[in-house]
Length: 475
Image 1 (cartoon, rainbow, N blue to C red):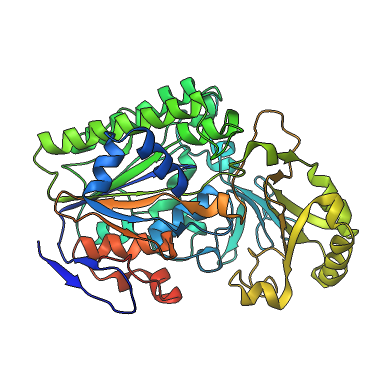
Image 2 (tube, rainbow, N blue to C red; image 1 turned 180 degrees about the horizontal axis):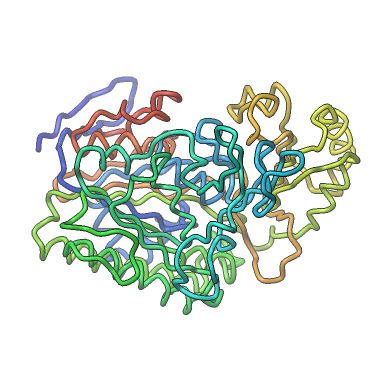
């Protein structure tokens, strides 16, 4: 490896550039983890694995995930280098004007909910029930034939997994539903092995999700031995060139217990327990890398798919999603509701009327911003008049507001706030020099950086080309 020191003027800090070609890249999402959480945790645990990884790595303190910040577009940000307007993936539960409902035979007018979550399983109460049940998939007319649409088929651009697999290398990925078939890419061939235990089968508390997350950890360690975990989809013949997955325990800790109502919003006991588990798991992974002689030749990337809002627990407020729907005073075909509302209207010509009525109900619906029309296209969200996956109106609520009456959560993600989008992002390898980058970056930049780190052309990613996505600083 060589480190080239780039000196920039105008009072800026030194930057260190890595031109190393690695044999392996491991990518982990600690779902929900904010960039501010990293600072808090390292302050509490200066001898932690995360602190040690940062000691030999590049940290991006102002990294933003996708907007919307749902798990699906957040994942694809990192693995395609592109945003929803390019990938076509807005949410794991959304709408498409060109699709048909599952089981409809593509009869009737097009326009259907497109939900890719535990609803696709044969039995979501079981960890493994056979993968995706095709009869649960939404339908579309492809070349005139009514066809079930798997998650990977809905994606419009290729993934890093496809690029690596096309080089004759092996790949593996682990996540919370079989619906994460998504990362296989449009070809459906991007993964040598997928491992998708169903999280809906576990109780929604930190202890249960730690037990669930341990399955992911065991898979990561198995892959370092070139082995397949039980119930994995596919096979491996060795250590994958590109692999990774996610942790859910911090996400659940934030939603169920959250942060303390005190200066700086410290972690609650349960949230800290989840963080300690993740840190110890990363420690086991690093120890295993060392024992199999792969530590120096592996780039570790930690980048959260999404954050969680609000960090300040006093700001949380649930509002009936129908408050938004009814405030439009027009017919709404579908509404995605979390700490955001994505509205698909039955008649797109009603958009201006709906926006006008929403503006009159800002206080009642706790609306901070309404995005539609030319402004929506200008801001990079796409054009609903030409793209059947793009919502007609995006409603951003006040920070802490969630369009849900659930009593089971005190935070949510999916929205456009900094609490939703400003996430943990760092890369580590023993040969890297500790460096912090404080300017704004996007987790889209993870995708081309993966290819560059492995010695391949980032331009092989269609989303990178379409959105002119740059490498992360330091590469």
